[in-house]
Image (cartoon, rainbow, N blue to C red):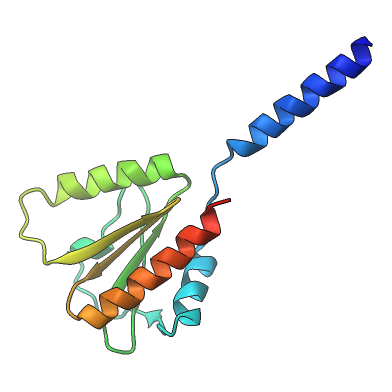
Length: 139
């Protein structure tokens, strides 16, 4: 009887522990989703070193890409969503006195994405990618 009770308790604890695990995305998953949505990315070149969308945030350097229309997309992959929140705080502190251009800022699990807003169609397509990424991280 004790063995059955112990086994049942162990199964319940393991199941509860599995539910609490945070889902994380990789850079490959994010870039694959962009490309599957028709947004072809190539590594950004010749970016100004002081570009606010390519600075290190909470110890994480972004992967900087450009679309075929030369639209910048910065993708930060943090080790956790908690580290991402600290990255956002870091961004806000570093840009508090700056005149930052209009931009989209998107969070999904451990991923932070910035893109300057130049074209409505571009933002709509990025938001579609974000929705797909969110669906990957929900049960």
